[in-house]
Length: 130
Image (cartoon, rainbow, N blue to C red; front, side):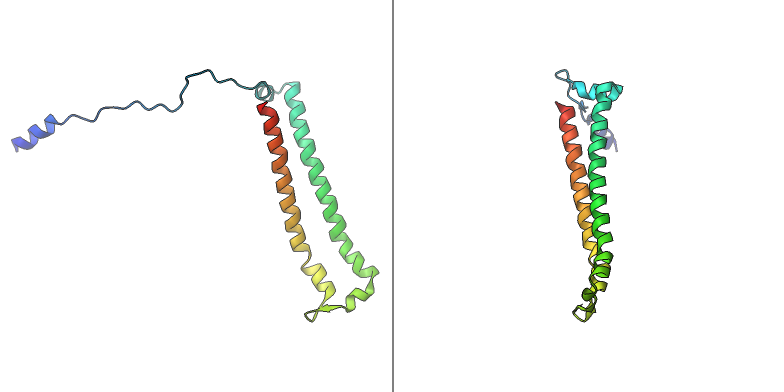
């Protein structure tokens, strides 16, 4: 038993290591635009307002296209009654146009909206980083 005690007392705890989470070798320079945004200065407000306007313009444009296309489908079928007689795979064309066609179109509009929103945000971030 004494041999276990001596071997345990002879073992030293592992040496402590210093952990550095952030290396502060040089002073980090904060771009003036970030300070303007945080302080809500007139310049920062103008930059945010520009981003919001770009996002709003894109969303209103896509909403208008959606209303025109999706609202125009029933009107097209009403004004051109001959389309009601056409059948694809024994399914009347109006059923396909009104029941199937809107879903891929809505997915496309959503994809475009997300892509444009990300583009506006990227441009805004690049403007802030200058």
